Image 1 (spheres, rainbow, N blue to C red):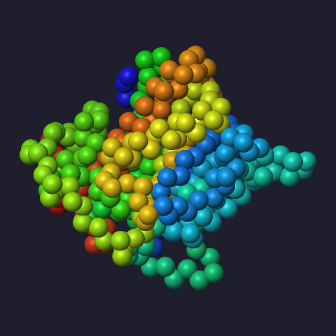
Image 2: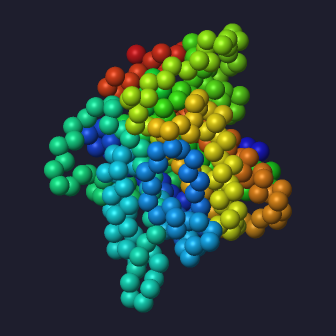
Image 3: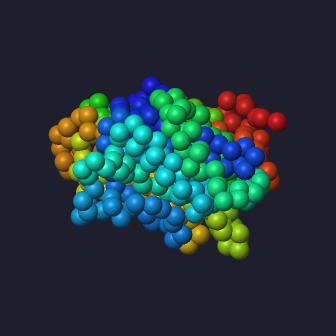
Length: 338
């Protein structure tokens, strides 16, 4: 395996990503656009999800492909971002056709990003529809990480969270990638250290050059300090591959990818997280081995998601009361931002 040329989900052929943010409100939207309708599935394991059109992705349901995906801040208000992407797609004739009607299928997942401050005097029109259309306008193969798109107002434990992405190319040429908004209740960093939980999965210094922790963790380190009175979290993600998958196979990849959250965050899948992972297949390469090949894709998706979580936190800038990882922890590269 090797890292893709951009080390982003857009290394998967047939995908573009766009970001748009509202700095005043400290919130944003990220859209994923397949060039052609893509097979999709979802696995929701968090206890407080905010989603749209996820039931349609069940393998027993009619919809066999999606035209776009939305990850948004704004809690339930952010679900309106899917409306914005739907109108953007429909105006271009992209959608599910029933007679003369064009109805784009746009599943969405949101995170709660109100704790980083920002002004939200929206009146009758929150910004999410407009942000989704703006994100679609700039979608491409290259996009910003950290405080970008839906990661603008994200936090992760006691640190600023953000938008992360990573990719890998398997030995048979299949590409796998991940995109994530890290807004977790849990922490991505081992207590009392600057070491990410997923440090061993880092590739090419993408998270500053991680090293093993300098001391073993004791029982007190592992006793996470819970403050459930705050709440308002969620990590939402997309994993993708260019393999040809059925909806049932894509669902298995989404489930396996959740292991990437478990390796990178502690705790995860809590009652105050809405952790949701979409899986997309752009159907460019045949799946020669439906058992072993699918297992390798799912494993790579989980690893990419762990790496993307590290990158989302590593690339984030301080905002409001939430400090940046690089402001607090010197990396192996010797970087520290002030």
